Length: 164
Image (cartoon, rainbow, N blue to C red; front, side, top):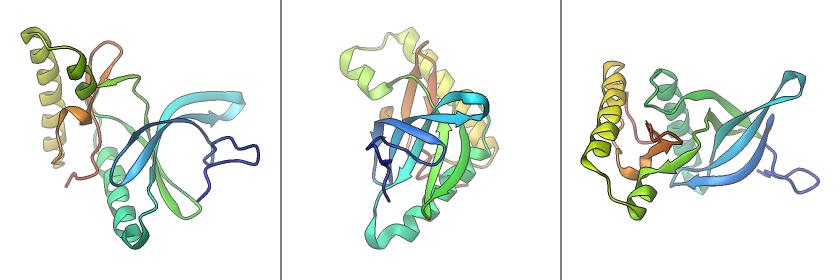
């Protein structure tokens, strides 16, 4: 699947892909702009499934499951999903874009004070409690799957291994 237009700019359906912001076993996540009516754009993230050869069906099923499970959740501590779409037969998940940095990156730079650690942990506990209340188990909570927004609020992301 080509993600470039005729001019060589990244493009995906109604999304303009700006840059890669993450990559994992299942896919690549891009910072993107969603084009909406009347010439407006909205910042978002788009997860595109990797070219996985013989594992394509399994990866597509996992991506659909991730989108379905995220769609069940509505909590400020959990990354929001906007839509599951297909481009050239390949699943893509349109998600909320969170400007900030992964907790793992922040921890490489600095130590957490006890107070800051409690705030992050409390926020994540609220998000996990919400997910569990909805029957969703994340199964991969780690600093690389926690994004801290510009105000330091934690958001749990990457529900690729979640079950519900």
